[in-house]
Image 1 (spheres, rainbow, N blue to C red):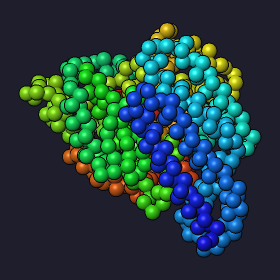
Image 2 (cartoon, rainbow, N blue to C red):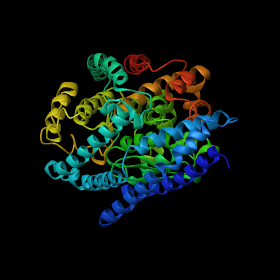
Image 3 (cartoon, rainbow, N blue to C red):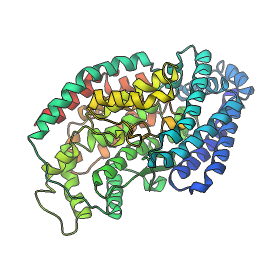
Image 4 (cartoon, rainbow, N blue to C red):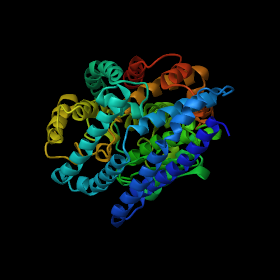
Length: 499
């Protein structure tokens, strides 16, 4: 057995452990009774340590060194070797005892967040979050020493390799300069086009039925995935067993439907990853931004198009409304206005396409100085309110539930993740534009509920590539250009001010 083959075998075993972690994490968020929290935290910490120990096995350095000298490795094997080396480098800088300590602290914090958020209890959450932040800073310092990156960039690199905060600053500056005035224009434009209310009671059962039906339309493979409920919509599991969740509000079916479509985009990326390489690092998703591009391409680019709404309107009316409902209320025009309604809101996951980047920039503006030690956890609520007032004119003083406690990310130690949401939105605009150029009839397809051509294009140009190409090269290869916030800006202008 060659040294490269030994590496493949070693990481195949790690993939099996990752599988177990993924399903345990899904169960914790969607099915686990509250009394199981402490035992689950120990179990997940034990698995995290086991994975970490395997990635830091001293033999790996020797095998890597020898494998890099081997001849005859094909393109995929060479890329896999590159990704293995990256994983080993990232893992070896963290001591086992630190991994266990951090895993336990993050699990305790995340579990507590579910109750503390519901109770609007910032004071109860603060000490848990303070511990998580302290450990994130420690991790950032260790990784910065090992990689030569800045502290925040060392965490960002975990989620979006090859992208630095200087690039994010540049792209976000375009959005900062554009969005505030554009938001006012859109609000004025939409004020002249009032909507008829859709109603305020849609049963959970009918919403679930509609969500499942749209998942089928998009091309979700139910032999390898399922839909459930959680506090916070997410996609988890593994490519062979993808678990997505949503949450339901009986007063607003669009909230759950958009959540389902968003997470289905994530899931279909996972289901489309190269089957022959799924147990190797090269067969995994390219990065968080790329993952988000797939969810936003489905939810925002494709499924908020007028063409898709034309297909959706009669189906939604049939499933959700006994007796069919009023013709004008369930017209394509009225449903499209609800679909593309822009408003200043407090909650990121419910935000529209125009205001969503402002929610992301707010979090980025807080988490970067938080990790770099320029601000403390105590400062978060005040800074959150200041930025919410500046960006959206909304007050969050004392409203922690709808303010700085609304997201699970910081509570479970995910720092460096938030900017990838808007990176994904920009990538989605570029990829969808490229798909439409490749098939000019794409929007006509969506009007008939036919996603087969769009999915085939994504499978060929994104999903099946795994980590074969570095992220910037994948985007350029698929879309014809490097990351450009201007494409996203042009998309917003066409959609929200064209009619």
